[in-house]
Image 1: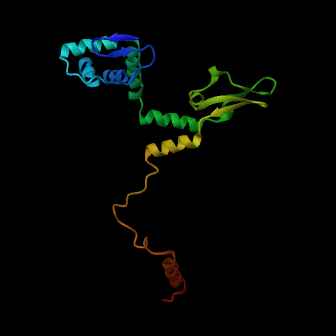
Image 2: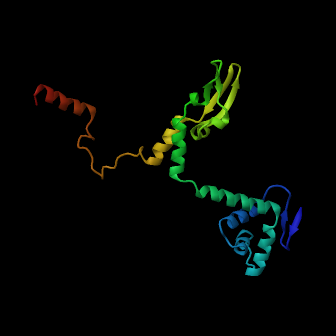
Image 3: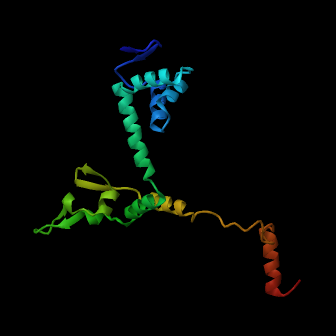
Length: 188
């Protein structure tokens, strides 16, 4: 355990405490080091002192690693788009379990070597489960992928009628049957 500065801030050799986690998150989102220190530790230190204390905290190996991890996460997050996700979901839908197998010289089905797998196969592959009868290729859920694409494209939304309503919408089934019976027989 190591003490930082005059405040009662202790760094342990395990994971980050709540304040250091908050500090790392603020730094990773672009907050000034001194401002982040003052916000997290509820201090009103002058800019230079807060910067020095924040800089000292940033030099801690666990805080530094967490800040780097958060920067890395933000980099990945910024590349997530509807297009990227829909392409991935479409690949899952397009892949079949039979794509993973090939016939060997003796006529037996064998798992294709990984270097022969297509991008579609790699995206759809979830794992291999060994059973008493051999192995089972596990793929990601095609229906779940289709539902994800449907939601992303907005195809599951109800149609906006602009507030208008069908005049027959409030009629009961019996009322509709009576009207149909009258039309069939011609009696009113």
